[in-house]
Image (cartoon, rainbow, N blue to C red):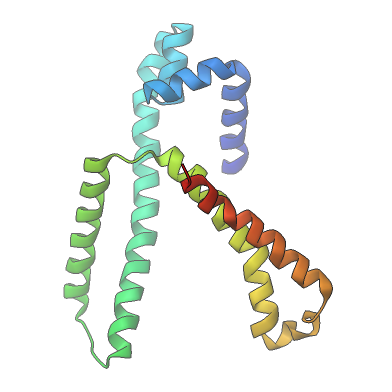
Length: 173
């Protein structure tokens, strides 16, 4: 139900504004709610937008923080386990918190274009997930070996590599 609500909000924002308005909101680096409040001069949205943005940012941060910290802790534990070492839980939590604080500080300091990063990396990541990972699984997972050796696999890998080449093309001047 939440996904439907979010998608309805996105579609209604896109349909309420022209492409020039969306480009202006992006150029001003403000949320779509703030732009809607300014564009349509609605005080209700102007007062509600910061609260909605605060809740959305908090939920997004906590969701990403929990996932990233668990992934970071998993990588540390696996790398230490490979060396035959163990780290205490309290030390691991402190190291994770320090890494997260430094990462957030670096992102806030350098202020990279998140939309630009999504545009640059989104396509290649999706290409890997949709095209290359299944072909890798067909070669490595015994239950899927029955699908290996088909000409369509070569086609899928080629299309995946073409889609993946978009990241190289985007870095060229």
